[in-house]
Length: 640
Image (cartoon, rainbow, N blue to C red):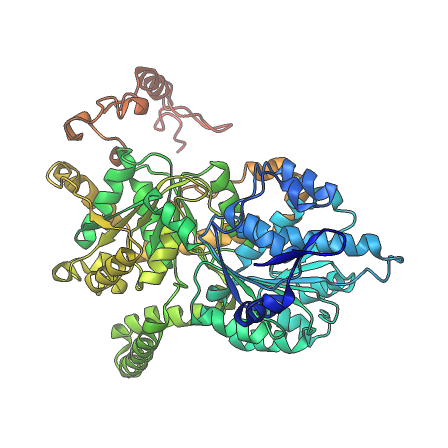
């Protein structure tokens, strides 16, 4: 670029000599054009002070012990402070929530400081949409934590939680600064005029690709029509697919957003999660799970994913038989109980969560195929049900067992807003065990994303049932395992594209053969009746804990810490000898002191109890007042 000295001897650019192409580039840069910003492009700030945040926000950041901004935060926050629309793709656990929460909080605080009257600044300025209630609670807690030093100036409301509509309308009437909701709940309050979006300045769609997979498309269109034209939009996602592109066209109308793709950062972290697969029969899954957790082959906390709620309780009851503590997470439990389970798991109260991944994340290529299969299955069940209803009552037990499953689906509309494989912030998860393999590679990716987060290492282990072993044990069979081998091929191919490998994990099944006969009784005792009773008992217990004691626990937080979710259901006959692993069954090389903490397991009662029982036998049982002793002879007292 040529320069010349002006009259003040200062060099300046010759405007006529700028090439036409460069001039057009400068003009396009002045316009807000779509740009892809890689993680390595901006230099990460040395500290949070470089963002010029409000001092109260900096105190909140320090209180949460955020040492330095992550890649997504260092890239997104400067653009967000410039009021740019942002479409960000980053892996789970990278700090996406704080990347949009902090700029929104800064904008609201700045607007309130510059406003002359308090009434003029009182409005709902931000709407945050999330796919599930669990994620809504998590985002709300993040906002409250970061704004803890300015809580008197800011109000946030979570209208995704299960509450009476009248209560939520009263809260929305106070015009909270930030509203966190699912799209469905937001539309309900928009239609009732309880939620006004006329003054909204910031819109966030978290887990954007997942929101569309939950069939929120119509709700999002309704929301887009009620939003102002100058709203700033954040689209946060773990993937950049066609679903996100459709949202971009729906909400980013004025200007193309800045696209933040942190794929290079993920490639650096690709070795943090080691992926393994084990091919096993259906009954061997329980044997392997027993060996992994009873022999303590895995250290740390684990999440076990199963296909449906029945499998969830079957595995839980099996673990109870063999003395392995675990807790359950599924869509039938009340929302407060689910949130409390996740919180206690993150605190280290529980080590094993058995999660039913009913609302799997399904890719576009598999969605039509699965929908067709579901339609065929529904048609078959309807025809079978009609045929069985015409049969004799003695043979009509099967349709009565099949009907409640349909009723359960319609009875729990909140199932749509339950999700555990995406968005939930599980902390310090050492292993993800796919007890039942998911039906798509996309769902597999999101499941294993629960481990190896925040610069930690993790392991993902998946059980695969070969086709020749499918339906060999009907009582333990799961319909979703029929295509395990085909799904495994897709998973392997998708992971290889990312430069990752899924390695076979070799278990020495001969060394575990000694446990087979011990586990047969435990497996047989977990019947369908026991599972049904366990579901009812757990549901009743959790409803009492969630609804009746919610206000009591708010007033007495210490008692909430004593509330546990890993108690034994015990609808099946418990066999105490299965909880102890004798030394002769331990594989070679295992620690012989593995069962030392169990203590002495004797076949006879302790001598103190024997002496006590003998004394009771000699004295005889306690007699009621006025009763005669055994020494009295009835013939002597007989009156003629």
